[in-house]
Length: 254
Image (cartoon, rainbow, N blue to C red; front, side, top):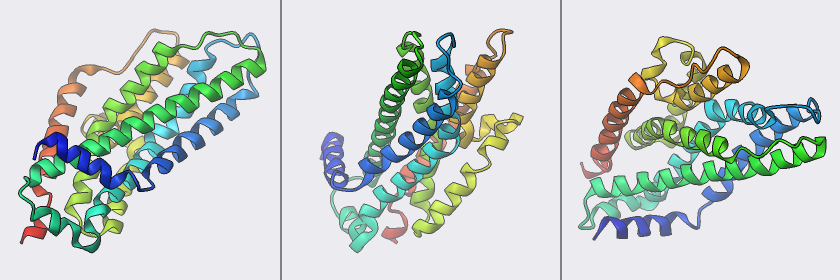
C-alpha cells in the first residue's frame, strides 16, 4: 500500500468527525473580539489599521487558541484508533506503523493549514467590515497577511509535532491533553527569555510579538531572526517527529 493510499484512508476516517466545525471556533472568537476592540478607535484618518487588527487578533491566537485547538485535534485523530481496539486491527495489516504515524501527522498538518486559511478568511471579512464602516480607505495588504499567516503555520510545526508525540506516548487522552496544556500556558513567559529558541510551544507567539514590537517602534525592524532559530527549530522538529513515528503503536504491540 502506497503512502498516498494511506493518506486517503486517513482522510476517510476523519471526514465524518467534528474536527472541521472545531477549527472554526478559535478564529471566529479571536478575530471578532480583536477587531471589535479596535473598531471604536478607528477614524477615517487612521493608518496601519490592518496591521493593528492583525496583531490584536493574532497575539492571543498564536500563544493560546491555536495551540489549544491543535491539542484537541491531536486527541480526536488519535481517538479514531483507540476506540474499540481499532489500533490493534490497524497494526495487524501489512503496513508499516512508521508510515501510518506519518500519514496521521500529515492529516494533522492539513487541519493546521485549514485553520490558518479559516483565520485569514475570517480576519479579512471582519477587517473589511471594520474599515468600511469607519471610512478607512487603506488597501487590503494581502501580501502582508499571507506572509504572517504562512509564518504562523511554519512556526507551529515543531509544537504540533510535540503535541502529536505526547498524544502517542500517553494512553490516557486526559493525561496527554493536560501535559500539552501545561506546556502551552507558560509560552508567553518563556518567549521573553533567551530560552524561547528551544521551546517550540512559544515559536508562533514569539513571531507575533516581534511584529508587535516592529509596529510599535519606529527605530527599524528587529524582526524574527532566522538564525539561529531555523537550524534549532529543524533539529527539534526532526527529533520530536522521529520519536512520534518510532513510538507509534509500540506499546500496543507488546
